[in-house]
Length: 177
Image (cartoon, rainbow, N blue to C red; front, side):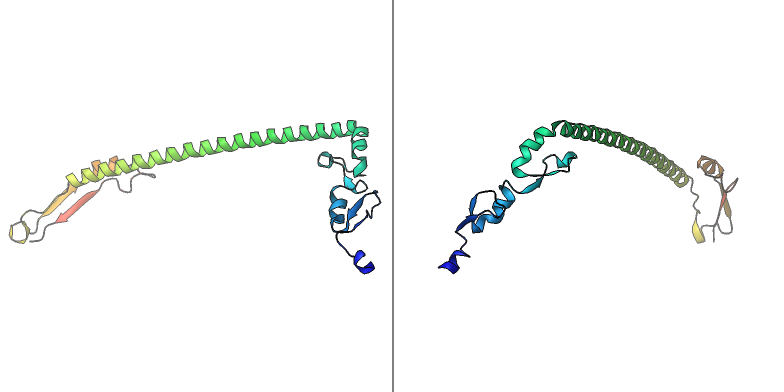
C-alpha cells in the first residue's frame, strides 16, 4: 500500500512549488504550467517591450506598478505599426503605378503589332492583285517572253526600320514555251 501511494496518479500531493495547493499527482504539470501562483512567467506586455518575469500571483501588482512604462511601450509599438502600414501603403501604390505603366506599354506595343499586321495584310492583298501570270503556257505562243512588274509603289508603303533594302524593286517572270 505504501508503494502504491508513492506513485498513485490520483493521490493529492502538495504543490512542489509550495503555493499551498494540493493537486492530484497526474495533474501537477498542468497545475504548474497553467494555474500555480508561484510559477514565474513573462509579463503579459512582453509583445510590446516589457521583458520582466514575475510570479503568476504578482502579475496584477506588476501591471499596476509598471502601467506608465507599459503605456509608453504600447504607444511606441502603435507608432511603429502606423509607420509600417504607411510604408506598405506607399509601396503598394508604387507597385500599382508600375503595373499600370507596364500595362500601358503593353497596350501600345499590342496596338503597334496590330497596326503592322493590318499593314502587312493590305500590302499582301495589293501584291496579290498585281501578280502577273504567263499567258498561254508551252503551246500558247508566249515562249521566250519576259514580263516585268514594277513594285516600287508597294515597297514605299512598307515601313522599314532602317530604310528600304532596295530603292526600286522589279520582279521578273520568264515565260517558258
